[in-house]
Image 1 (tube, rainbow, N blue to C red):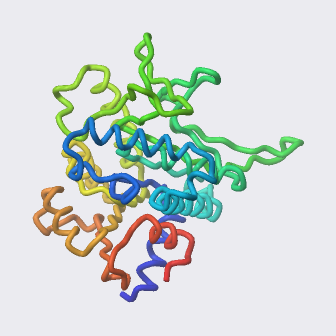
Image 2: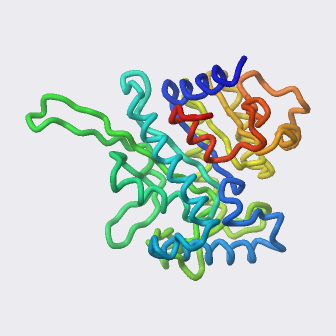
Length: 308
């Protein structure tokens, strides 16, 4: 199969299947370091809080930070590409909705969505209820938004994007009623779940984590779905187990993008497949597409039909 055919197959999967993404920390490099580059999770959260504060600055200030500006640009391209794909899909066959599951605490996706919504018809759902006090409620996911004609003579489903953050976010904080409040700023004591050792955490974090993973699992159990994975190495054993379980649904396709050719072996090891993955799990390596590395920018280009 040549590069062009492979890229077109990936794009057609996005257009014709129920669309899901799993975005890991590799997608935000080099603006934000990997966990392995920090001494502990506390240091990582501090870095992410600092970088997310910069993200919320004016565009003039952002333009002076190359790492943040470039990474934000790749996220913007992805969000725009998702909107484009959803507009091409046939809502009679598949819903015009996409889900992004991310283990990242940062606000790159939220910032990118905010910039894209200014000129792109897309409904964004981060699971929040409320107006002045916005709190997270998992029952708020799986909502469909439609536009009806002025005379109620037709209903047109609007493209929608749902963001699910099982590890929490630097703009989330817990209130006195044990609810997660979603702020429009970086908070001092964010609700974040460390990438390892959930059993030792408090009940509140455990409940949130498993509630979000339940949403993730339900989406992957739906027929005719596709999951694009990028920047995620499957070191999180909870999510790796869910991926293995989800692959029992043979009508689910998982397309995993590898930053380097060597990553494929590591991902297989973390998934405990020992070089014998199921047929509905595919790995896209850079050399297959004539690249040295594959990142978020490449995924955006593939979805837009602009990959070169």
